[in-house]
Image (cartoon, rainbow, N blue to C red; front, side):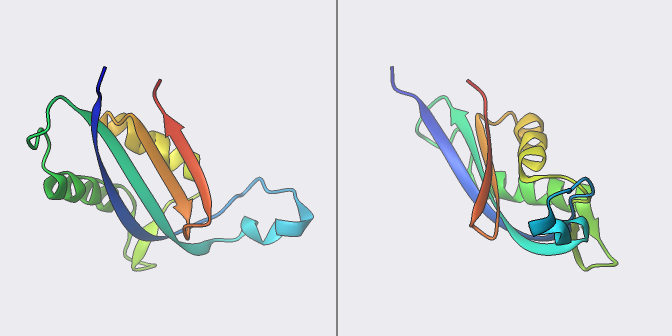
Length: 115
C-alpha cells in the first residue's frame, strides 16, 4: 500500500534548560541556554494534489509555536525545561502528525512517531 506524507522544516531560536541534570560533564545544562531548534513535522495526506498546502501548514505551526512559547524578554522562544522529545510530542499531538523531530542545532535529535 502506498502512503503519502508532507513534511515541513522550521528553524526556531529558543532557550531551554534541564533543571534535573545531575551529570557533571554537562552540568551547565542546568542553566538556560540558546539553540536553533530544527523542527521537522511530517503529516500523512490522502492524495497527491495538495491535500494540505505546504506553506500554509508551516505558517500554522509557526503561529502555534509563537503563541505558546514566544518570550519578549529573550526576544526568542522559551521552551523552559522541555526536552526535544517533549517539544516534538506537543507538536505531534497538536497537529496530528505521524512523525516529528526536534534537534538542537541540527546535531542532537529527539524523534517522536505514531505507529
